[in-house]
Length: 483
Image (cartoon, rainbow, N blue to C red; front, side, top):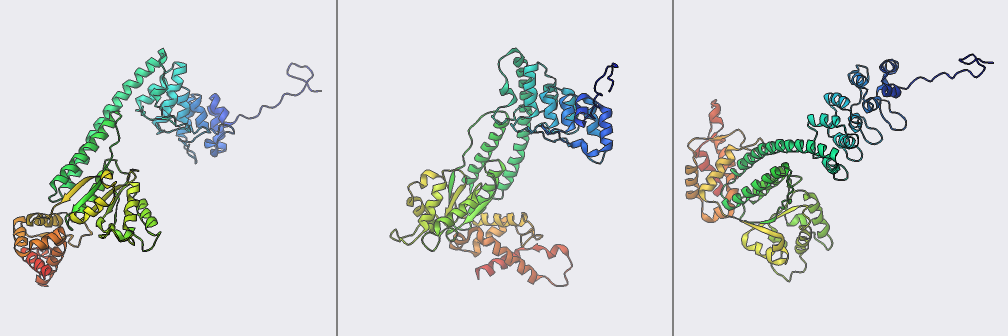
């Protein structure tokens, strides 16, 4: 018969099972942690059966500071997972915060734990620290997180910020004052950042506007939009709740070569830059991209292009070609494409710009009763003067990218704006300038470069001369174009 501890007959005592690494983390058994990790380094990120928590979760949740430190600084073959998640999607920092342990939170943050990580319910460590402080009256974890600039404006899955979880009780009053103080400071910092960013964005936008010749009324409108949108960013950074700015659908009216497509691309960049549009893409389409040859083809074809343009701008060039000149033409499917476009314009998923000659565009405007209700901004692109064409030539030469056929070339100092404008005025007719506008410049410069190649001697070794276009080259380039 077995003898018990007090010498009395009885069963032999059961042998106590070894503590798990999670139990060691819970009860502060650092030696037990060290021993188990030496035997099996993979245990450092092992998850327990029910809560799927790692040893770091457990140590942080029980404020076992020595073990938290040891696990974070352990140099074994496996590194501790700082952002491991338990069954509730909580990280070790969430565990420290929800139990009000500022010391463990401090160590985790020092090692790079994310202050804005969200659990399954959308709560950040600050949400949970505030929840604990409300019930326990201990603000240590809240103060620790705020000292490291935890964002007070983050919302959980219920749309609540940490401040929204407070009531009007005496404990909550102190918490409210603490949070308000930090919210005010964070708004001040965000406003300063927004102001600095706004200045950078405005400078980039102004630089883009400088590349547009003429179009003063349009540039003024774009300038107003840019300033308004950038100020809206600053207003929101200060915590102000304001209406979302809507971008109007537009019509660009003018002859070819007056810059309609270029301005549409610039507008796409602007609207994306200030966060109005998700992308800066401009989907450029004409009648052939939208209209099918047979019954039932036009709708799907147009919808496909609209889908491609979502989040950006749909630029419908020569839009008047969608409307037949003779109303009795019942075999034309252009009107179907136009109506398909009109049907999505109220959904605000895409900004539509219709472009074309002034007079033919009247057909589009009058063809659909809802056109003027949906298209509220009309911009007129005037024909370029000789001086403006010369300015465009200079801009193209001074703002080349590597895809340009004139990349690396420059103008001779004799090719002033005045000299080039005088040449264009003298050698071209008003009719030609109206027909080509800015479209005259690229072929002129390509011809000028070819003339430079013809003019140079093969023995020329002067690097500057090899890439300098002169007035002689521009004169001959223009004459070649006119021929």
